[in-house]
Amino acid sequence: MALILDGRRIARTLSWRHRDEIADIQRRLGHPLTLAVVRAGKNKASASYLGQIEKLCRRVGMEYQEHALSASDREQFIGRICSLNVDPRVTGIMLSWPLPSEWDPELVAMTLDPRKDIDGLHPLNAGRVFLGGQFLGMEAFVPNTPAGVIYLLRNYDITLSGKHAVLIGRSNVAGRPLAALMIAHDATVTVTHSRTVDLPSHTRQADILLVAMGRPQFVTPDMVKPGAVVVDIGINVTPGGLVGDVQYDEVSEVASAITPVPGGIGPVTNAMLVANTIRAARLQSTVA
Image (cartoon, rainbow, N blue to C red; front, top):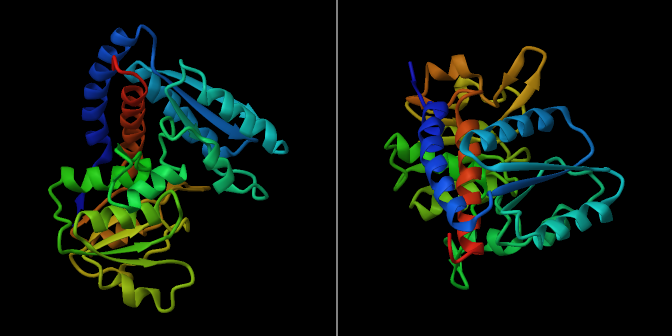
């Protein structure tokens, strides 16, 4: 049976550390750290996620703002981001996904102030990640999910250097930046996706299999190399509850270690969001 990579345990430890850091920074600044989330329209899955973020902010002592705007007015959405960019009391800005399908996500991301872009979406931050983490004297804001994956693996002393990591998924918020981070940690990386021919032939070569496909229980045991580490990044809402992209029970019999859903990558991702907000506060103020 595989070792369960418990993200909740890691997130609890980080929460205590972050709470102390936030209290110290807020004392120096004289005002609270504030995370502002901007969303367009309503989405059941994202609403549940944002509820978790709000509770986490309250728990670590940060303020939380949610700006709910119309899904039919892109200019209003961009205008709100611009106003938050220049608001000195707003520390970090996060966009709630998905955006309306007719909007250009890259254009929206470019509107963000890179110093407040805590999910690493702005091209400056994305470019810094792919260039090895730093450019023009400023470290990148690494997207929270890839950062959470790396933090979790290292917390469990899972060696990345020299390992063959295979990713399923190539999104800008998960697959692509995670590939860059794995390369930075000296892994050999293969990126696969929905158009990959004979996908199982690639996944069965993985020492570390990272799955961000967005398809419920897509990965079956025959797709996994015996003894591989399996990281399930997927979160899918089904009538039976939340499930990942991996058939957890069955794959656990093949893998050496595996993340559960829920309780695996999700809590660590949220903790990275807080860590990036703390970094944003320090970037924006000399007293922090």
